[in-house]
Amino acid sequence: MIKIPKKQLYKIGIFFTLSFLYFLLVAFFLIKFNPLFVILIFFIPLVLIIFLCWQRYFHKRIDLSLKVQKLQERINIIKNELEKNSKIFSVLNEHIKHYQSLKVLIESINSQLNFERQINILMEAVFNLIAIGKGNCLLYLVDPHTQKLNLFATYKEDPSVIIKAKEGDIFDWWVIKHNCPLLVEDVKKDFRFDLDKIDKEFLRSIGSLIISPLVSNEKILGLIRLDHPQSYFYEQTDLRLLVTISDFSGVALENTKLFEETQQLAIRDSLTGCYTKGYLLERIKEEFSFAIAKNIPLSLLMIDIDHFKRYNDTFGHIAGDIVLKQIGELIMRYFEGYQAMTFRFGGEEFCVLLPSTSKEVAVRLAEGLRKAVEKEEFLLRQKKTSVTISIGVACAPLDTILQDEFIKKADLFLYQAKMKGRNRVCYS
Image 1: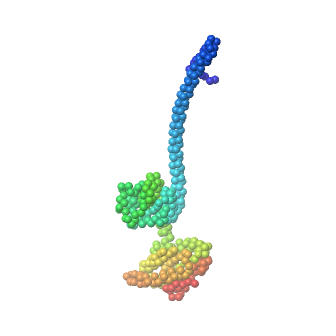
Image 2 (image 1 turned 60 degrees about the vertical axis):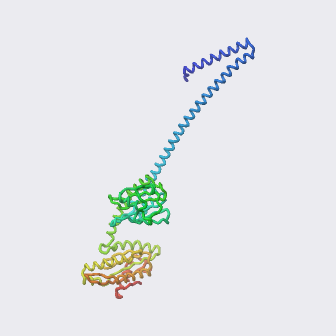
């Protein structure tokens, strides 16, 4: 049941009472006076009622207008809050995407045990995630001997841009000196750096940049740098993300380096620095299968030092080790720039594996190596002497399509070289 307020009941009562009196008055005048006079008497209150109704309407309209304004203000406040929440949601969404990308990046880097591949994964992620593929991404590594920076890898929006500062510039040196990240929003306005100190030869268009050191066990391994020709391209949030990536990347890269160094110790001969026989067998297994499957030539040089026992008998075993070490270093030096791997096969024998190398080219290289060794001087017990080598050259699939016969073929041609008088190259 609806309850009507007392005040409202009072107003309704007055209205009906006045209405009743008014109609009584009209009836009285209709009986006593002229009807025209009655109409006038009726019209005046009617006008008054219309006026009062209009006035009430006007006030109601003003009240309604004020309510509309208040509602509009409320709508504007809610709209602003929605915009703020939308921005916050957008930022949170970006953070989620970044964290997801970081998770993928961490997994990718930690799953790799190859230093160069790790660097490529890191550079690609930083360049696309933070720089959005714009400007330049540089990675410098600290030389452990000279403690200087060396440019190791680059990612560039414009391939024609040449990075001439191979050892870094004043911004990179500042990071190394202070061992902390750097954000420069506008290179021309940053009072910390004097652009006149940058060598004009190395100067290129840089508006803003961010740099973070790669640190592991409180040791600086290098730094990652992003720069762009436009000022204020990078901001604090970009630097924070770069620092986060650098923190875990430094440790991962250091671990990979240590792993590779340990692996190198395991697969390299301690005396000559060449790879071991065990590693040769592993590489042949992989390279031979690939060569046969793709019908690509694979050549092998089997090398033996002529009359090696004579050097041991004449000058002693220490002198023999000197000869082995010098020969090993000479072979590795000779094949620098070629796709080649040098191995110590055992005793005084060495092997050189040449992927994607035809027999003709392998024979030419073998002959060049033989002559280089023949010209080399060896100082044994303060006496200058010379050494010669014999070489057998085998090529797959030309000489064999069987992996087990590959080394045997090279060894057979080496035996022929010895039988024919040594200091020569033999092949089928």
